[in-house]
Amino acid sequence: MRAPYHRESLVLQQDDTGPRHYLNGSPVQEGDTIEVRSAMGWVRGCYAWSGRVEFWPRLALHPDDGHDSARLAVLRRFGPDTPCRWPNASD
Image 1 (cartoon, one colour):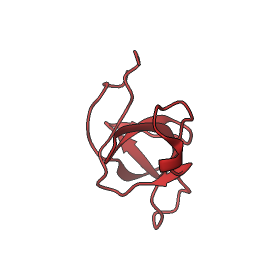
Image 2 (cartoon, helix red, strand yellow; image 1 turned 30 degrees about the vertical axis):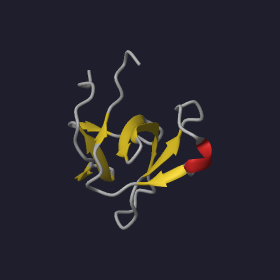
Image 3 (tube, one colour; image 1 turned 90 degrees about the horizontal axis):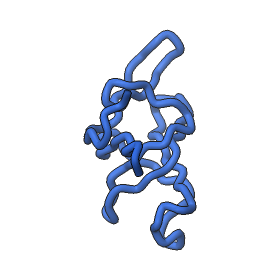
Image 4 (tube, helix red, strand yellow; image 1 turned 90 degrees about the vertical axis):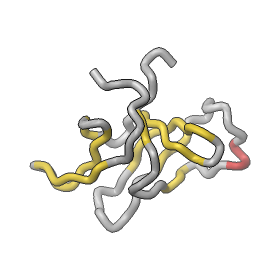
């Protein structure tokens, strides 16, 4: 089980299939829901990444995340030091 609200950044590691991001020790899969810290607070969305280490991952925003969609792009890139966390299962 994943520890809720453990704040850390994604860690890029090499595994059997190639480069992969890990969050709080668990591999992050395409489409997994994670939360990323932004200037507006924690933003929840689906993790997306090309698998190419030269490109940053993206967060596909959920339409019901409570933020003004006019202020946010559908896909947001986030850097390697951006705080991330697994969402709380009870949310």
